[in-house]
Amino acid sequence: MPKLPDFEALAIFAKVVEMRSFAGAAPELALSKATVSKAVSRLEDRLGARLFNRTSRQLALTDAGQRLSERAARLLMDGEAAENEALAQSSAPRGLVRFAVPMTYGVRVIAPLLPEFLSAYPEVSIDLHLSDAMVDLIGDGFDAGIRIARLPDSSLVARRLSDMRRYTVAAPSYLKKHGRPTHPMHLAQHKCFGYAYLSTPGVWHYVNAAGEQATVRPSGQLRVNNGEATMPALLAGLGIADLPDFIVGDAIASGQLEVILKDWKQPEGAVHLVMPPGGPRPARVEVLADFLADKLGRTRRAAR
Image (cartoon, rainbow, N blue to C red):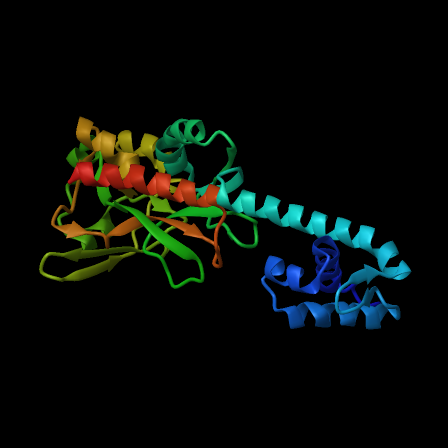
């Protein structure tokens, strides 16, 4: 395989031509005069031709140097333009953010916030991917995602946005017909709806104020891959479900659903913004992260 051109030496050569001296080019490039001289000598050795005629008072291009100078200058100019464009992309909020968010949380919580964000940052676009499945941020090319859970160890960079309470709930009609469980182990005698994407699928974990723990494997007629899909069956009084506040909060407040096992809690989860490792991240991602932290953190503070 042929060697790549010595782009560094060509750029240094172009800067020497522009400044008409090795000493003048060195501070422009933030290099020592010796480094500049070595780069030009390296290029001359590679090309097998002298590029400058040097005297103590004058630096003049040879014929070979003259022929090369125009192309080298264009190479330097294109390189500087490409770098400036990349820096502008990373320092100013513009461009596309590919954002993966759980379905119902995305529709109910994130989507209503986007008009304000998009108005504030008119050069930023959002590709909102809605799915409860755990996407591979890096493999699928996402800039950021939302995780609602206790996060496992991961190489992803995580930023906590807000708390997320879960409630075990049932309709009053179900409780009237089947009775109210008072201990998690009683759930084994009840119809419970399952959710496919729990961190421990098919298992509900509880703890009470005394530190007693209970782990149950409830079963029932319905299992879903989106929590909101349980709501019609829940409201119809057909079973019990364990769901986050953003799905059942309004139904609890209106009395359509009742919280059971109030003396027991599922381990507290949280809403996290997760991003691929490495950095610095583009400004378009940073401003979205700051915006969501402010909005969701404000909601959390108001709820206290």
